[in-house]
Length: 111
Length: 112
Image (cartoon, rainbow over all chains, first blue to last red; front, side, top):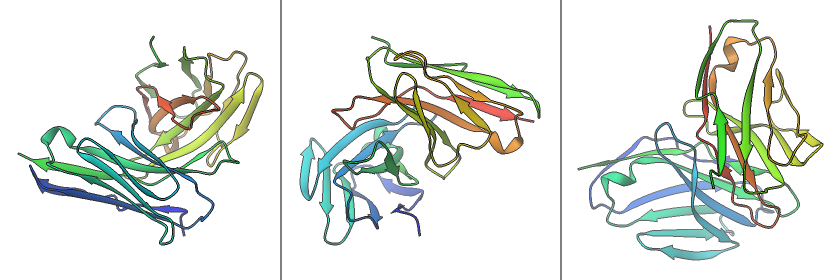
């Protein structure tokens, strides 16, 4: 079993829809949870960053962490074609130098 | 402020050839990383470094070598290239006080 599981998709939704992207993990020691966005033929860029449990909102994006279920989510409201990208979740333990990555979900927003 | 730069952008190698992928960052980050990304497989860590003169293996180090003589540079060496090393390679850097990793634009490598 991988430490972080993420459905690779692709996930295709119409413009304006609410998108839900998810990751599950097995290591209860993870404390930091990140979502990166990667456009085609580009490097990943940090989108959202949360520490421990709870919600964090930034414009149309909301990151949610449920440590009891070992489950994190990224919600995108009023999705736009420019949101079409691959979204990677990543997690980190304070005592380690490495991020543990999900496989990434390819998201397609249809105009 | 260029961030993380990588050269070359593209390269085709023949089996058995060697090459060095260059990575430079201008953010004075102590931590640097090399990843490979295969289609639908996410990022796999090859090597990382926590400072000049210190490197360590990641998840998939076989067939690769690194060095870190300066804070800015972290080259990745491929010896005896194999078709299994066909991938997109990303270099990243981060600060010890912040988990955010900043990525370069990547190098697309094909081994034929």
